[in-house]
Length: 289
Image (cartoon, rainbow, N blue to C red; front, side):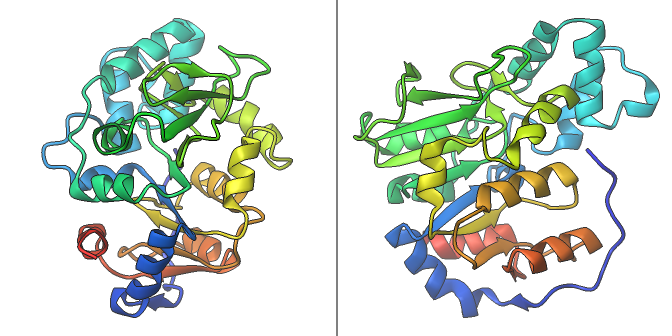
């Protein structure tokens, strides 16, 4: 992942008290799509899996020899391992890193209980999937994951039902679809993590090829609420921008930290309202509603 960009003055932020009623209303009525990043693991005490790209790359390079200059760069380190060992080595290390299933936080469970039409989960852990499994009937939700072209050339995504079985497509019985654009640990160990994984997707994402048609339909007219996400990296900005395409013109991001220059530009260009409050506070306020 890229180095943090220079800090900038913050875009206009709103207090959570100002914005809370419309967030609650939008989430309960299905008009707001939760878009969850790795920071969501901050809500889970003693989380047993890597909760940041930096923590993940540290685990990978502890078990595979990688040149010093890329030891802190997740996608480049994964690419080196893939090139000089094998793709299977990358998958094996990722499976090991995310083998433990975190206990879902109260907020994860609240989202699952709401069963929004669409949830976007942009990290590899299984906390959100576990929350759905614990709180929803088995037949009313499923997931779709991005696939690495090095393993599934020509196939961009795979659908799985609540039991983790491969599904032919989206089921009309599913009340909720969890979209995992960079893959995930369960049920099949699908990961977009190396440079080549992302190059393949980013080559096509402008014309939306890697984004399932069902996701494109479900996002139409809806807003996104980014939680546990930072936009100080080109990859995270590119994915978010393309997943938001042709949706509502009003979005939200829980971002208590001062945005970098590029984050501020991303928020402004995409009309994302910054909520200047900690993730834990906003999660507690929403889940108590």
